[in-house]
Image 1 (cartoon, rainbow, N blue to C red):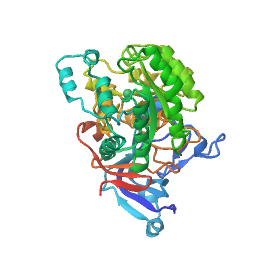
Image 2: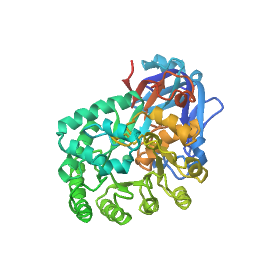
Image 3: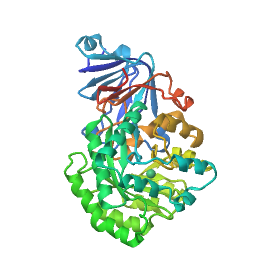
Image 4: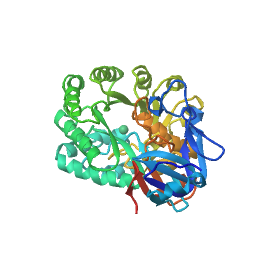
Length: 455
Ligand SMILES: [Zn+2]
């Protein structure tokens, strides 16, 4: 029996499923998860946790389990029978999982959640055979969202963002990244960034901000002069805004859409160099339409993730496997665009790449925010196993947005010392999440130890 210090206990868990990096945790014969002593690390904070390649399948599945929480951090994870009754008698709040499945809260490392306008008409055009590029040439695409977003006030962006985040939370997203990129002028990009920073303080989901004026070149502006404007003015202004925010000061990304018709490899290198100078972290939209070498650049410049990767080369997969750059795959986009080809996730995993999954929630190419749905798509189209998908949506998604790294909080893992972000489902087994594609299996969400969704 273990007497654990906790203020909250999630009990009656039918199946507890969690990615469990072996360099940090072990499970004993009694079914108790505990940290392993490591020679090089004083504690969990010093570790860099990510599941690479086959290690993505290292998922522990425990029946009849319980989780103890103290001050928002997990203090116990393991068999329910091993948790001493004294612990529960000590006034701890009990959350009954009803014999159902429990996982760590899901993490979305790639979203474009802030925008105004809706592009339902464009969806119908696309269904009738028009391509993404044809629609862009006809004034649709990012341009349509840009003009709607430029017309929105900060208050309106906040209200729209709040509704979307409530829906994401209900679908089990406990941490997400959000990008700017529908302003494409300094003022609107900063208003978008401001809305992201404010939303991160005013609702339960943890938000990692990304500044992305390099999402597209605005209409009627010359390519070179827009890139110069980003480098000479916009990044500095974003830095100033972030420096006033405690959380964002040292943890804001700069992202570039490096692809045909958007930004060149040279643009991306120049924008990244300036971003690094200013203390931003890096991520990149790479190899969605064609391969311009963005993934190689991402590995060379220490980007935390390279995203999309439909056309990444095998050589670059080897490079990813050796780097700290996570491959963030977005199967919702290839599904929503009705593409026949999907990212080669299996090969990446065989080669030892750390694969994460994101929604790419945006008004055009992927109007999908549900991570349980993305989980289903990843099994169907990317051929991930159910366990690999869990790692991709939790521990690796965290690493893709700079969490789980040395000195950063550990999320997406149910083990002592990790943040107590937990999803309770209305289904009983891990396989039932992808199986129930299209239905929300999340019944309760616990964020840092507090129930934030579900009764
Ligand atoms: Zn994107």
